[in-house]
Every structure is written in structure tokens, then in C-alpha cells.
Amino acid sequence: MVIRLKPTITLPVLVFLATLTAGNSIIAQEIGNYEPEKTWDGNPDLNGIWQAIGTAHWDLQDHEASAGLPVMGAIGSVPPGQGVVIGGEIPYQEWALGKKQENWTNRLAADPETKCYLPGVPRATYLPHPFQVLQGTDKIMIVYGFAEANRTIHMDKENPEPPPLDTWMGRSHGSWEGNTLVVDAQGFNGEAWFDRAGNFASSALRVTERYTPISPDALLYEATIEDPTVFTRPWQIRMPIYRRLETNARVVEYKCVEFSEEILYGHLMKKEEE
Image (cartoon, rainbow, N blue to C red; front, side, top):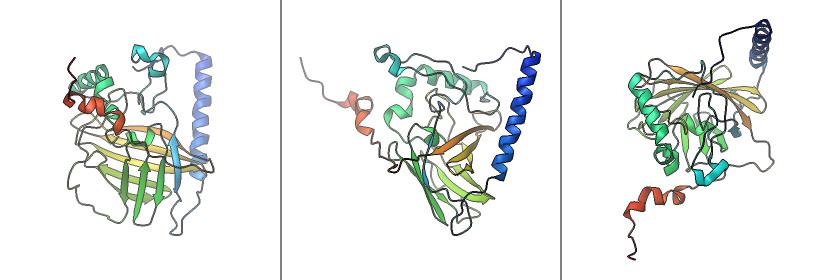
């Protein structure tokens, strides 16, 4: 659900908006002026363990609090949160908006996360788990905790061939634009969701990610989503990602398959006769 402000604009609101705009300009200037530490080959050093903070993994858009299973009480509910979609709205085609609403209705069983399937891109980035960047010259590897997911970003192919097959995590190719790592990801199987709210795409999905250092301990993460079979136009998300600063920070494997066996294979289990 998108939360909209009433169109009435008063003088205090105008002053606030002017202040906010000025603040955003200052932030943009600071980001542009920040010079990150470099690796031996002269590119920004993105090595480390990172994590997104927010509610994007519940819903990319503005959303109110909502209930989960009654038996779980508050721990199963969805907290309210601010969206990360630029402009606020995901531009679904009419049929796809209906599919998204169907996904939301059936989310407790239909969400691929429930079944411990690989999270896909960009969802892997803002799941509530840390991930590690291992940076080389020709390859960059990102290791995620959830479902032992990982991906390799190929930096050594200027004109990459189309992915040989569709997969949950797709195939990623990267390049540097100044201090920004730009990653083109394609070749998805169309089964992953973007969040627990049922936002989705098809196998025609193409994600262009941008990782920009904005301080020693923060990255600006941006992703452009393209899928002409589902959306009326490309759209973007944007959020900060923070470095985990614990001295013993690490990515701990979250092997969740055993917790989803009942959902996946319960119907195949032999029932004991009463």
C-alpha cells in the first residue's frame, strides 16, 4: 500500500521542502567529493561485510503495518516502513498488478523465501542478513548468508555473451565508472520475488546495479529494474548499505532448507495410520 500525502501545501511545508532539497544537494555534493580507499589496481576497495538496514525486504514500497499468522502475534507481523522505490510507485502493467496482488494474498505459502529458494537479484542485497564482497581484478564475488547464495561478477569481458541458461541469481558482468561499480545482471528464471509483499518480475528481467562508496563504512546501492513483459517502464530503487564493524564480523551460513521441508515435501511423507 502506498502512503500518499494530501495535496494541500502550506507555507511551513514549503519551507520544509526547500530545506530538504538543500539538504539533499549537500548530501549529493558530499558523496561526489568522497574519495574512497583504493586497491592496488586503482579501483575503490569494496572488500568487507555489508548489510542493508530497513524494511525493503518486507516491501519495497511505502507500507503500513499488517498482520501475519494470528498464532505468531506481533513477531509474525509486518512493521511499517518507508519505501526505496524512486517515485514511490512500481509501474506494473495491469495484468501484472493483479498478479502482484495475488502473490500478496498467498504470500505465506507462495513466497520463494518460505521455501528457502535462492533470493535472486536485487533481493539478496537487502535481506536482513550480512553479505561479503571479495574483490579481485577480473572477478568480484559476493557471498550471501541466506540459502548459501552467491554470485560472481565478471569484470573481464567487455562484450559478454548472453547467459547460457536462466538461474535464480542470473549472470552478472561489471565495470567501473569512476568510483562506482556498475553491474549488469540478466538470465533470471523469473521465479524470485523482490520482497515479501509479492513484487515480482519475469525471466526477461534485467537489473543494472550501482555500488558507490559514500563514506568509509557506507555504500549507496542503486538498481534499475527493466522487464517489458511486466512493467510499463524501467524503475529504480535506492538505499544505503552499511559496513559491519564488529571485530569478528562474518557471514554465517543460513542453511534454511531443513526448515522448509514440511512445506516442500510434506505431501510426499507417509502418514501414520491411526
